[in-house]
Image (cartoon, rainbow, N blue to C red):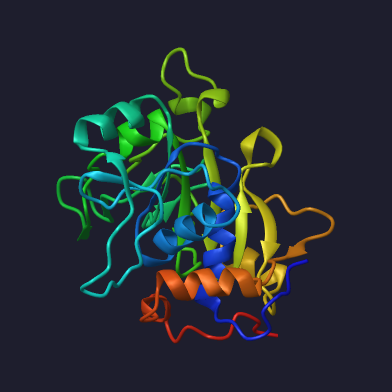
Length: 266
């Protein structure tokens, strides 16, 4: 029986919550974009889903996820070659699940990583650009990581620029249905959300310890489906904490959230 940790940070709580996005995916390529999603995918591979595939971000598929920092004598456990051509075959076949960090998310699950404000030709803020998100979102499953839950991210209307497919019937490509779209979890510093509501509405899955439903609602720019009983996000187990420390021995995770408070903010 697993023993839950009693001393853990918000980053560590979010890591184990994010690991659930990969837990039931079977043999898919796990891509965690950013430190916390990357550690989360590693935790899932080493615990809940050993069938996950993970690369070294260069050319090899690994039997064991690489730590974020490695000693000079560390030898990574290469399983097979996984160059770009094989990555694209994997992506187009749908055998991938990525966790990305959008700048905006709307009620349909459409995401924006491109630019905000003004016009597309003259935005107020320019970000990454669309990059591969349109094709990736339509080809394989994605989850979202939001380090600061607020109405600037969870916008009232549509995203300023729609970079990814979502559950918007008005934007579905010809021949597509909601069954062809996979958006998993949204992990934020306040809660866990998914798209399990009526007609794929955003649903509140759990609030983090010490956070109220009211805090989540007032920081979200669109209505949420809220169950009668809202769960509390599960604390990391001691075993998960051990994996986190193995993957991130220099505690880079602590720098990813402002002040990185205790995981239980009661």
